[in-house]
Image (cartoon, rainbow, N blue to C red; front, side, top):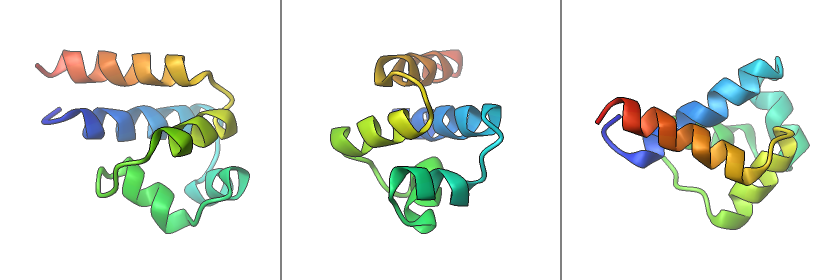
Length: 78
């Protein structure tokens, strides 16, 4: 990964797929527009901590676990 934002987007995408959720379904659960979720997953937009808490809740995972997954992905490509 070139930066942590990429790793975070990948961690969100992987968790979403684990739950068999489309971007649209995740967007609905989180209360965000599908375009915004897509931009976060593609590292076009950087989410706030509040947004991350909401997404983690929608992904049924503690924010700390989601961040650990992102950290692991980031470290793999150092």
